[in-house]
Structures are given as C-alpha cells and as structure tokens.
Image 1: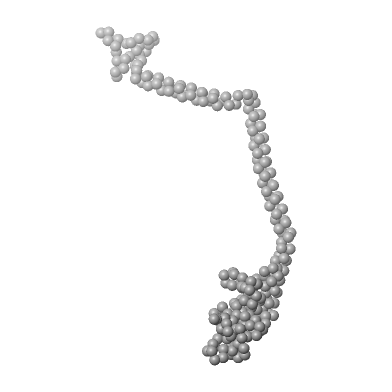
Image 2 (image 1 turned 90 degrees about the vertical axis):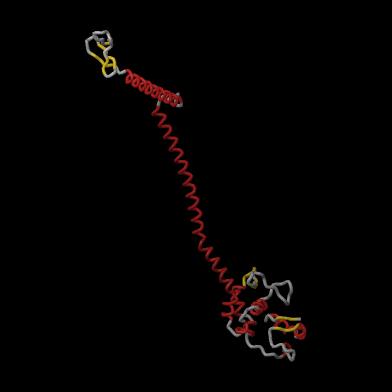
Length: 250
C-alpha cells in the first residue's frame, strides 16, 4: 500500500486526509486522528482488562489448596447449619427455662393466693376486731365502730402480731402513758381523733363534771386540761383522758 500521487507528484488528499492505494488498486482515505483515538481507546480497554485479571488472581489466592469447590461449598453449608442449630438450641433452652418458671408459678399460684387471702383476713380481723371491741369508741364516740374504722382504719397496721397506729406522715404513734412504747389501740385512736378537724361531730357530748370538770377556771373544752387539773384526776381517769386524746396545757 502506497500514497496516491497526482500528475505533479503531490499526495492526493480527500477532506484533508491522505489517500492510499492498495495493491489491488482500491483507494483508502487514511484518518490519522481517528486512528489515534481508536488506538488510545483500545489501550485503555486493555489496561482495564489487565487490572480486572490481576484483581481476580489476587482473590483466587485466598482459595489456594481447594481442589474441589463443590465440596468446599458443601462444608460451608454444614458449618452454617451447625451455627444455626446452636442458636436454635440456645433458644430452646431459654424456652424450656421460661416454661419451667411458668409451670412453677402456676402450680403454686393457688397457695400464694391462699396465703395472701389469709394474711388479709388476719389483718382485717385484728384491726377490724380492735375497732369493734374498742372501749373508747363505745364510750366516747357518737358514731358506730364501722364508720370509725372507715375513717381511721388506714392509720393502723399489723406490726408483727400487734395492731400499731401511724400518723399521716407514717410515723408510729407512741404512748403518753407508757413513754417509749407504741400507743395501745384506744390511746392511739384517741390521739388520732383529737387531731381530726371534725372531732366535735363524732365525739359524744362531755359534761363538765367530776374530777375533770373545768369548774370556775373558765375552761369549757372537755378535751383540754391544765397540768394541774390533770394531776388532780385519779390514775384511772388520767388513763381514760389520755386514751381520749386530752390536751394538757401548762
């Protein structure tokens, strides 16, 4: 193949591109810029293919020594199944544990309920019975025991076997008659009633007579005595007034 020349010996061009003559006489227009672009593109593709091949070879080195890919895949699947089974077994253990706890709870639930019921009944009998048998309520209050219990029952709790009174702040009420000891039921109830803002509506009317009479000292409140008046009472009257929650002033 050679360049085509005109009669003057100059290279024949077509659209700025030289024309070549093949051995068989066929003319070819040679596009140099296009050819360079094609060569550059092919070189880039070749580089890309080479890089992919190198990456694949590097990855394959990880599997060196594996002569049977199918067997290797089967082994991996077996390991996965074992891991899954371990997880399932762990779940089964937790399930069995939960069911065992539930079974024990269900088995002993009636016993626990019976115990709680008996405890509630004992508390109700101890506290309710104290209200029902209260001398203070019978002698000092104008409302029946069940109404007194409805109002003041929440202040009493079982402390061991003893019915013990507590104030609104949860503090144990102590005896004025026996310092250092918890107040007995009637004494504690008298103290609670004395601090009740509507006590005059639930206490029976008290006449100003006997050792506790205010006499001519101007004291018209039967629930308040001076220390001098309190000391003039007999021990029995002092105890009764203390149970009634009498206020002693100096």
